[in-house]
Length: 92
Image (cartoon, rainbow, N blue to C red):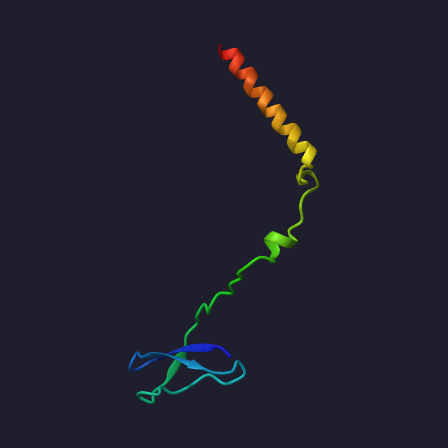
């Protein structure tokens, strides 16, 4: 059940009222008994905490973005080291 915000048109009082979505909006201010207007509010946002949501579990990976195999990782490290040694040799 949501909480709705109301504002009195005469006394300018702003208050909240907890009611069902199917209930009719309030029509009278509880303080001065004059006409009220229901305000449009953003409501509370939906917050996901923890793992198991779209970005971590359900996002589709593109075919070229596959994780490299362990052997590929080793080869990449070897290539990187050999490039670094070549650069060092060229500097001296």
